[in-house]
Image 1 (cartoon, rainbow, N blue to C red):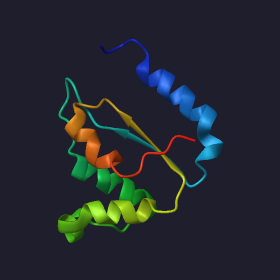
Image 2 (image 1 turned 90 degrees about the vertical axis):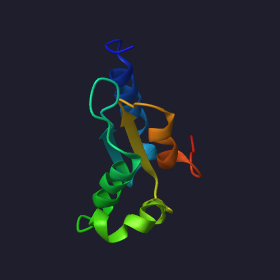
Image 3 (image 1 turned 45 degrees about the horizontal axis):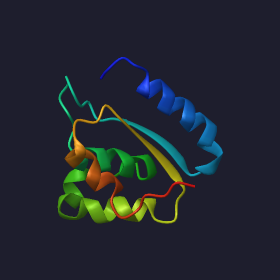
Image 4 (image 1 turned 60 degrees about the horizontal axis):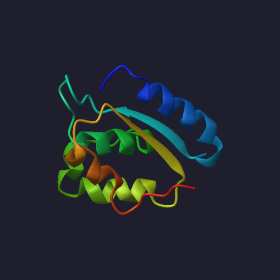
Length: 101
């Protein structure tokens, strides 16, 4: 249900945890319910560009997942996923490496 403060709560929690993620804090609005959701492919592109501004999605279309994992490997980064449409939109962004510390 929208409008009950989930984003505000998540952002507040993110502020409390910011020192645990010194390499990056990235906010992604996935434009879910009621909007035009962005694909996990495009979301990965946004994260990659945070570390590599010259990145062009078309150049790595076949292995964007590998490049996404590569830029995050060894980094302590917080990625805040907001307005998620469904599970399939999020799974490629979090699989294989979810750590809560």
